Image (cartoon, rainbow, N blue to C red; front, side, top):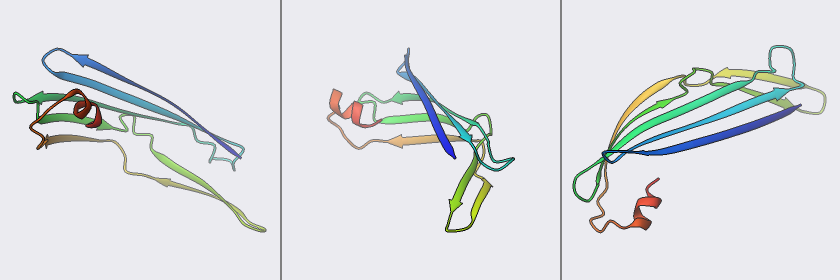
Length: 115
């Protein structure tokens, strides 16, 4: 059997100290039992905005698994048994996140390490 993962991501800096981030992962399963060759596309996106003079307050709205396709498939191979297992994982959800960073000396290196 084989499993292939393909992924892509995009970050866009928007006006008013906002940032749009999105990523997608396509998983293709091949040569498994009937009903287990499941292909999924997991798409996550977030919109974040920085507040305060040092941009220490970050508010973001994150959507995970926007297409609600998160299904886990596994193949277990032992000496004389091959079993395929399919399970549903936590599906689509939206999260409102508020984060306060306690660093008061903001510089370019700190900004890149926060992500």
